[in-house]
Length: 299
Image 1 (tube, one colour):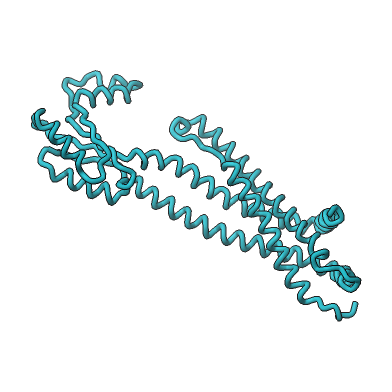
Image 2 (image 1 turned 45 degrees about the horizontal axis):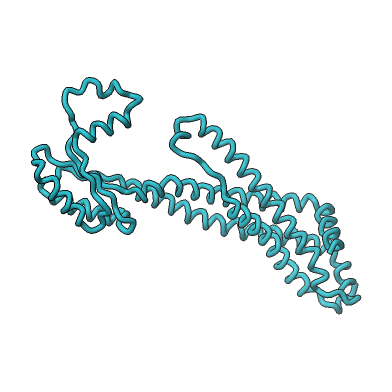
């Protein structure tokens, strides 16, 4: 086995220029694809809490009598898709507003009267947190005579989810493109090495060396190139991530969004994928070369 490793490293050093270009190509592919994955992970972290906490705010007319509040609450709670509904009086709503704006108390100091209406806060069941389901419920709520306005923010979350879906589709397409390009480049790199050693390979076959014995150093070389490219690409992504997260922590957005890097399982999958690229490039090149090198060909 050590003989195979020595031969693989020897080929890498002897063809270092071509192999360096191969490693850089794999690294760029890993960097771009991993950046898309990192984007998906962090956008999901941002959107999921809002989707899981989807709610509808229902504002009542000023003239709704207090004795209608309890029957209306039961009626709303019984609607399809509602997990639970909570009554928020105008006074409670004002207290919540003051707490949320405690850093800007002057904005509420000059209020002569409470401008907020009574309201119901409605939480949805997980199965009804889609934009379409919330729209149906909102339409039913607006039909009630006591309801003045129905407000919910799921529409723009749905649009953001659609945009993220487009980015995800683009990431898949780019991933497939760069995977194919990397395999092609690795295959051509190994093919160049094979042609430079074709006489040596033919002698080995003539003296009885098996194809597995001949292929082993090349497979190791492909795995090494893939691992090096994957590590370099992930290292570049980590450096960019640390720079971005440091800059974000120093801004106001850092209090709202906490970036996180790829989990270890994803890093391992990326490294395994880059090594697969190296191995597959070698496999395709060796299959073609050894199939076209008959034993009867004169040296």
